[in-house]
Amino acid sequence: MQIYLSRPDITEKEIEAVCEVLRSPDLSLGPKLQEFESAFTKYIGTKRAVAVNSGTSGLFLCMLALGIKPGDEVITTPFTFIASATSIMMAGARPVFVDIDPASLNIDPAKIESAITENTKAILPVEIFGDPTGFDKIRQIAKKHNLPVIEDSCEALGSTLNGEKVGTFGTMSVFGFYPNKQITTGEGGMILTDDDYLADICISLRNQGRAADKNWLTHERLGYNFRLSDINCALGIAQLSRIEQIKAARKQVAGWYKEMLEDESRIIVPAEPEGCDMSWFVFVVRLTEQFYLEQRNLILQQMRERQIQVGDYFPPVHLQPVMKSRFGYQKGDFPITENVCKSTIALPFYNNLAKDQVAVVCKTLMEVLDNQ
Ligand SMILES: Cc1ncc(COP(=O)(O)O)c(C=O)c1O
Image 1 (cartoon, helix red, strand yellow):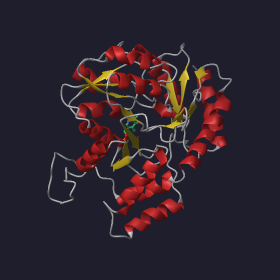
Image 2: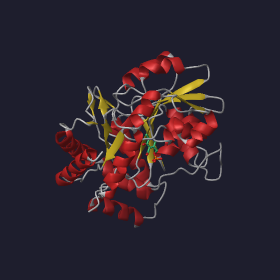
Image 3: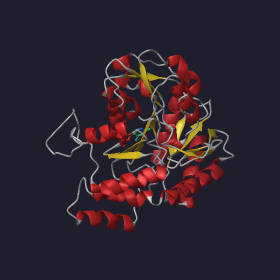
Image 4: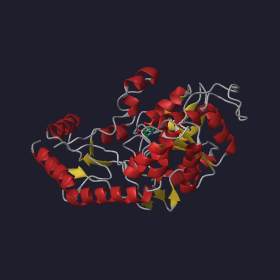
């Protein structure tokens, strides 16, 4: 039987919450939108929250709200999901990549300052796989250079660093609710900020540039339809209400993997970093140095042939065809990222993954490694 890479976890209560909205007249811009946003400000601790229809839309709106425009540069990581970088390009700006710290796999704070130029207008760091390591340092560097931080927290809802919640390190931060995330709304995202001006612009931008006076057919600026429906919000409210339970369930699954793989010398198992309370997004192991990219790909293929879904999170963003053709990035530009990318294997990981399924995954992985 197939073991999936990811599965959503939707309770009967959550289905009922969605049905309740469907029985009401308020399918969009209704009370559930505000309720979802309030639940987020309460949980994260920021002053404002603006719900949008995806994490990508959220990141793009942050660019626009901060006035990022063609000719500007935004510093980000090449080890992430493509949207961290393409949201910069959507605003006409250039993503300037900075290589990662090989331990945390996050942008290396020590390398950021040398990438800052007079065109740099923001830093967009990502808590990759849920790990907030380095964000305290990034915040200090940004402060020193008077640059806003757009915190891409799409993978990290619920993580903390030295007791501070992810989503509070940036001038603006963004969460994503695609079904593989810690909580889902089907599709969706949330922008968080303490800045009223930025939040108000995002509210207008997500709703066709409408004026704050709510006159439906007055449009003050070029806007978009990035609204999140009340149907999605109802699901999000219910999911967020059990984030601690979700976090604990995922921690348990990560714990089983760690236990079962700790003696396996051919792979590096992710550890919970110092000072962090991790909200696990995925469980990504890394092959040790002796393995080539082609071997890693063969291992992925053989795992899939044995009905275990696995992922290659992530290929280097700077080597994506769109980045090479637009900006001329090439192989060798970010060697640490490239080295990490050839070694990663994302194993099945979700709230309700059972211990015996984790055992099957681990046993299969070891057998596949024996075959290399
Ligand atoms: C780091 C990161 N940034 C941005 C996104 C984009 O979020 P969405 O898929 O909701 O647009 C994702 C989601 O996969 C992500 O993992």
